Structure formats: C-alpha cells, structure tokens
Amino acid sequence: MGSVLGRGWSPTKRQYRFLRFGLAILLVTSPALAYVSGYGQPSYRYESVEIRPTDGGFEHDRDRSFVEGFEGLGCYGWERSRLCLLERELVDRNYTYDDPPGVFDSPGERYTYVDGRFYERIHEGRYDDVTVGLRPVSSREVLDAIARDVDHLEPPLQRVVPDGTGTVHRDLDATGRIVRYEGSHYAIYRADYSEPGSYIPSLFAFLAGFGLLARALRDELRG
Image 1 (cartoon, one colour):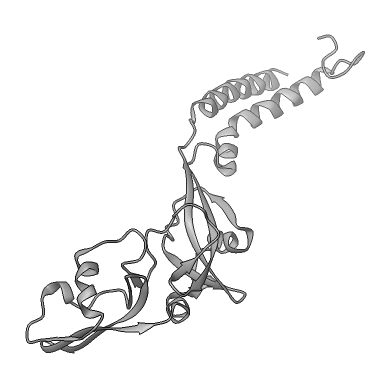
Image 2 (cartoon, rainbow, N blue to C red):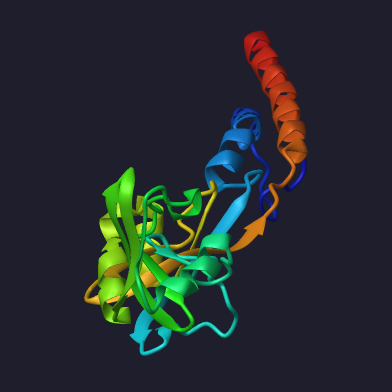
C-alpha cells in the first residue's frame, strides 16, 4: 500500500481495515453530526440593547432604529394606528360615552406614547358610562411597569442579555420584550437571519459511508 500515514510506515491489513471501518462510521453519521453542529438549519442572531428612560422617551446604544414597539406600550416606535391618532384628543380631557366607539375598547397595552410623552390609559366602567382618558406618567414608571424578569425569556435568549449577542437555530420571537437584568433594562431583538444550508453534501457522505461500511463488513466476513 506504500506509505500512507507517515514516511516509511505502511499499515497492516488489520490496521487498514480498522481505519476504513472508522472512516465509514464517520461518513454514515455525518448527517447527525451536521444537525448537532447546526449545519443545514436556519440561523437567527439575536442582540440585546440596554434601554434607559429619558424625558422624551427611551434611549439606547444603537444608531439605527430597531424599535417595532414594546410589549405593554402602544403607539411607540413604528406603530401608527387609528387609536394612536385619536388619543391625541384625550391628552387634555377625559371623555365619557354611553356607548363608546369600538376603537376605544380596552386596549391590550396599559401605556401609550403621544407627542413625546408617556401616558397611562384610563378605561373605566363597562357597557354604559365608559370613561376614557390619559394620565401622564414618567418614562421610568413605564419602563419599570412593562419590564419582565429575565427568567421570562427562553434559556438561549437569557444568555443573550449579558453576552450582547447570540445565535440559535430556531425563531425565538422576543421582539418588543423588555427585561430586567442586574438593575438595568434590556430589549431583545432579532438582528440577522441566515437561510439553512444544503443537506446534499451530508447525504452523499452518508451514501459513500454506507457503501464503504458494507464493503468493510463483507471483507471482514471473508476473513
């Protein structure tokens, strides 16, 4: 066989069979190894950014705007719904309705952002005589109220908070969620997405390994 693994050294027949058998096993298991390593799966890169309260809103250390909105806070970021426009009329006074318009149904977000200020939404009463309005609140109060403990995140995203970034192979939607960590507040957002790679190389490796393994077993049985 000549020198294979080193100058002046040739494997014995037994060593050759052992090496061939090992290579066959490696090729056959390559699809599983590729899966464990994340090859062939989509990649989602998440980042964390510290959120700090200011007089006119929140500030963060990102140059670009990543805010699509925060859980528990309406009309902040890119959101511009009909309710956001109508709430400007509630800044100076409350309104009481016998049968309030559907747009004023109790919203899911407790707080809203109108013309550079934060407000707590007032929605009192049921059916008849429903009062809607806005109560001014500070950005610190809003941030403390909408933030959750970091334990509410899935474990891979919990590690993103102190590390600043992390990559996982499934979509862990946490867009708009603010968490508390060591006395500070952080938002998690998906910064990048990569398409999955092809499994075809692993498939060819599996077929080649299967053929090599079958030949190795046949030779072993023949002695």
